Amino acid sequence: MTEQTEITACGTWEEMITNEDILRSIFSFGFEKPSPIQGRAIPIIAKGRDIIAQAQSGTGKTAAFSVGALTRIDFAEKNTQALIIAPTHELACDVSLAAPPSQRTCEPLRPMALTW
Image (cartoon, rainbow, N blue to C red; front, side):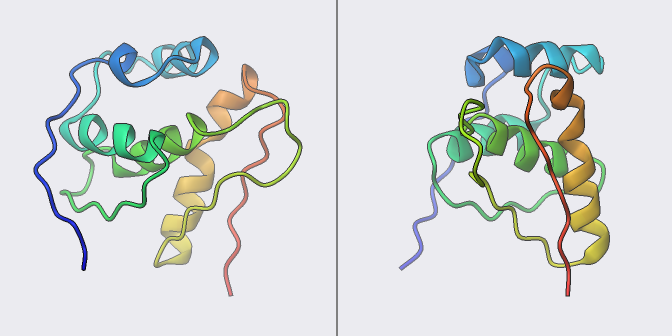
């Protein structure tokens, strides 16, 4: 059975993310505070739990998945550590493109979109 609970959204990036490199990357793009979907989804993803999220277009879902996955990555490891499954090629590309900004501070991140 799937567990459904109401999640209280975190109001700041610092509440959700402890990695200074990831925070710098987020702030370098001018993101001052997380959107409601980001504030709810990122803490769940950061705990290693699976998530299905639904929100309006343009609310930051793609960044929520990408940033949430980044919080789980050990950048010293050189193996695959995160997998985000998207229902369309376009969304897969969007998710892979949302991660590279962190590449400036979080080497050796290599996001890619694989479709078939």
